[in-house]
Image 1 (cartoon, rainbow, N blue to C red):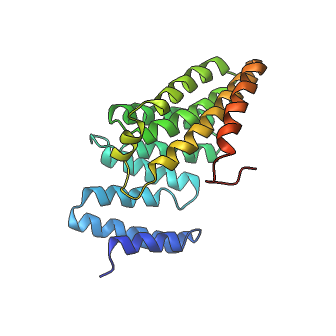
Image 2: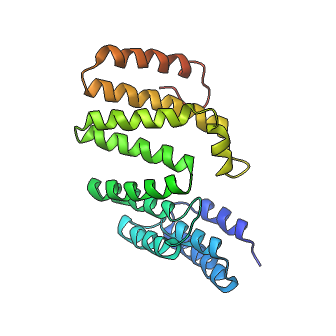
Length: 215
């Protein structure tokens, strides 16, 4: 019998081929249900919520949320709300995307998932800027930057991540994006000198960074 890990590898191999991915994901989900493995059941719904059109993905995300709603878990149900937020953004329904980000943020804060919180705050900041609420965006950015620079940040990341996850790389990439958010917030507020100061800090880091295309 093919192992769960092999099924996940197949899902990645057939990325973009929804019909094949659906059969693989249902094989994963149905086996998990037979075995009563609640974590893998949630994982099955999680993967099904990523492979279709946004409306169908939202339905599977709702199934994931319903299944995990009473859990006290580092990943779920926050991940379900994050999936919904992303799918609503694909539909250009930014209000529903925002609402689901707020729900995800509540769970990620209670369950102390720092990687989810950093991502959620980044999305909320972008939405606030686009809606002309730049002061609120800047307040959220202060929160995000403070979380990033906390002495125990890397340890918190390792606590909620798989062993192979590169926590140091995650930190570097998010410090870079944090300075970018400061630049955007201050430009939107007309604080051009502050924006330039953050740009200088940003460039001093990115010039030493090898992790992605600097363009």
